[in-house]
Image (tube, rainbow, N blue to C red; front, side, top):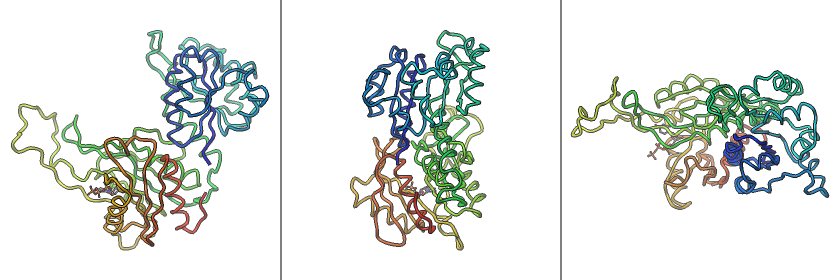
Length: 408
Ligand code: CTP
């Protein structure tokens, strides 16, 4: 079931960043409903959030009275994320006020609450605000940020709302840790996932890379953790935040990734190779920046082949883990995609392979994927297309049934 997230938006200029927060949560497969305070609507319009969330936006305590909306919303949501949370909102939450829809909903419900404060440094440092925060923390409210940096007033100091990705990650972490925790269907299983795109340096400032953001790998890590697994994410240049509760190992090049994977393989039960790995690297990488006037155009760029990490792992004589590969293909139709996928599945000797349709406008960075799951054991092709969170569920359902456990 998609997590139900209620995003509360209060009246601060950082509300414009909450558009990105709602989008990030939606892309991660959440069903998001937005409640705005009257002050928030002075900064960003309701229509923006309705379009991004695909749900109506609620504002007034006296709208939808017949359905007792603050109670209905409190029962509906699995989590409340208030971003930005102004100093006034923190004060009203701490005092247990319920004179607008957002505070009434927060007071009525029992779901975990995340707040992302945003305000001027002076307001943040005021003992009144700090006392309110201490009260909220004591009651289990999770506080993300604020960060230090340039403020709207032109001053520099603590008070900027955290990055939307970081807020979404904190919200995810609370669900991952708080819900299934370590008792899910993958409890006790060690899952290693590669994610992101490797970068092969040409010189200290340039590299050969690809468009992978790492979103699919991170969603796999999150879903595996939600099902109770002990997850290691081998991360190459992620553009998305990693939920707490997932062990992250940062790597840069294909060779780094290969080494980190080797270090973790021995104890793994499942290995999912989701990363976009560069097939080639520059034959040499310059110690200093390559100058255009000294570059030998005739000789061009000489590349050497990187190891195929998935194929190496698939060829291991005695492996005791379930191996899942990914394939990014630009074939226009299902038949072509599946044919390419089958060939890669056989060549790289994995147990499962997810074949993904990619192109100039699809695949990398997108929220949805066209994806088919192929299995080495049979001819069945499972269409797991949809939001990337659904792709992650489809992969882990197959892995869980292979391991002999039930799917979540
Ligand atoms: N892969 C890998 N090492 C490489 C290249 C790819 O481990 N040097 C893995 C990826 O993590 C993915 C799978 O192999 O799980 C397929 O990646 P893809 O880029 O689709 O295929 P390639 O093997 O690179 O084949 P081609 O470029 O010919 O499509």
